[in-house]
Amino acid sequence: MNFVSTRGETPALAFSDAVATGLAPDGGLFLPENLPQFSTTDFAQWSGLDYPGLCAAFFRHFAQDIDDETFSGIVAQSYTTFAHSEIAPLMPLADNLQVLELFHGPTLAFKDFALQLLGNLYGHQCAARGQSINVLGATSGDTGAAAIHGLLSKPGTAIFILYPDGRVAPLQERQMACTAADNVYAMAIEGSFDDAQTALKEIFADQEFRTNHRLSAVNSINLARVLAQCVYYLWAWLRVPAAQQDNVEFVVPTGNFGNVLAGWMLQKMGVPIRGFKVATNQNDILYRLFTTGEYRIDAVAPSLAPSMDIQVASNFERFLYFNLGRDPARVREVMATFKATGKYTFGDFDRDTFSASRCDDAQIPAIIKSVHAQYGYVADPHTACAFADIDPDRLSVVLATAHPAKFPETIQSAIGITPTHPSLEILKQRPIIKHPVAADANAIRAFIEARAV
Ligand SMILES: *Cc1c(COP(=O)(O)O)cnc(C)c1O
Image 1: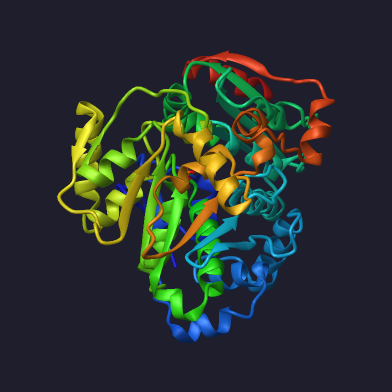
Image 2 (image 1 turned 60 degrees about the vertical axis):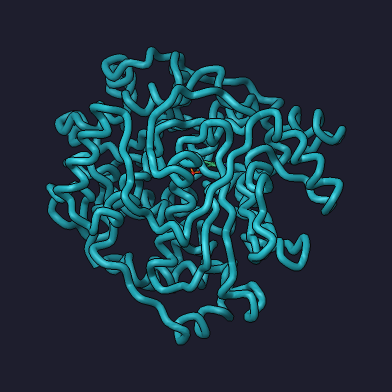
């Protein structure tokens, strides 16, 4: 299995090379050359596996340049850092409502699923090739923390994470800036997340700089992240009652579109998932897309669910690629038009599969309160967005993307309870070490240049 760029101007790469490269040199995103088609025989074999076993079995179809035993070892190591024995427990709240808890990893958000694995893949690659690697990413909060914890003190690696100063939750910042690991650089950018992402794209477009520093991207554009996220959809789907398996709607708190894209790709691989609800906060570019067909940039309004505060969904290009009949020339054309005009209107986009909901800051505390009253369940502000508009005719599986203890103020104001978590209490005792940098590609390049391994 090889991996191709959505823009079609990069030669196809094997799994390890596509993972190491991150963003394709032509500016596109990597995707499998073709999607495997799974069947009931596969589902029967997989239903008895534990989480790491399922993950390894799934990746066998993609990571074909790493031998099975090595890959299984990498996977096993990646999920030992999770605090729950089931890794991704499925909690029933009602007959037609379940919560898939994705926050039992080291940074208490779903991004650990992909980034623990990606960190170990990088570690494996450094060892196998005898080369150091410098990882660079932009974050609106949880990605940076999860990426850093995936690479914490790993020999041969350094990690540089850009985040909008003052616009991530205080505990998210502590998860990035209080690790005390000497290969970690939390870079506080003067600007928005989109400013950070724009600077990052410019740096990755600089081939010489990229090559000289063996730079790899860790944000949601990395192929390994999307694939790792397919696994928990599969895990959950295999666990719902057989009679409801053809009526499952995953409800996904959405920002950059990486999480829900993974579920949708799994559906394209033959897993009969009925639908996906894209749940946004007040930064609702994707809500507007899936309700009107128009994808149009707007300003970012900081919200109570900060990890969803984006206005350009970086994974969107992968979705576009499939929707344009996998024609890279058309992807290039549409992306160029979008860049120039800030909008794009879809003809069709799998309307039968996707629905959408939106939730503004006034609604988030009210939903946290009603979910707590109705089900005795404490949802973090991101997960709360998913409860905005549950379809009573489906089996809704809500993805709980973060632990409520990461957002204690919002939960406290909604239900009068302050959730805590031991790992966060430890961070509060440590000093914050962050590096303020202008939202400017040259300033960022200079910072990296001085510290790269
Ligand atoms: C990153 C994140 C999201 C958004 O996920 P995308 O893949 O960017 O759509 C939602 N909730 C939490 C808690 C997150 O950390």
